[in-house]
Amino acid sequence: MTSRTGFFVLSGLLLLVSLVCIGEGVQLVATGKPLGIGIGLCAFVIPVIGVWFLVQTVRFGRASERLARELEAEGGLPVDELKRTAGGRIDRASADAVFTRRKAEAEADPTDWRNFFRLAVAYADAGDVPRARKAMQHAIKLHDRPGVSSTAVD
Image (cartoon, rainbow, N blue to C red; front, top):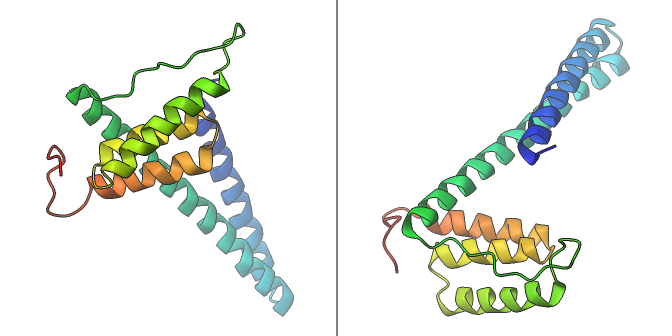
């Protein structure tokens, strides 16, 4: 299953569970008992939080794809230079070497979103997904700064 298919399946399940929570919340509020009303109102909050996370994830994915398309048009996408094991897994030493180089590039020019995009890819290749996400969020923030052309290099 591709990640996109998995995302749509999980999004559909989230929306289904949200509908069930809202339905149960309505029934609890309809009891008229203080405890039922309190729990019912809490049941309305759960879907809101879930949908908020879903919207944030979609926005992040679209922004990441937008940056990838722009970097590809410039010819600046990182090339897969990682060594792999016989089973196809990324060699850890190879990933660490590429990561070290990408981190040095980002530290040398911390205002260029391209460096942080490539750093995010290096983090992901090294298996550090939370830091990869943070680096990509920083790249998006740098790219979307007001008054800065997306193609201008600082």
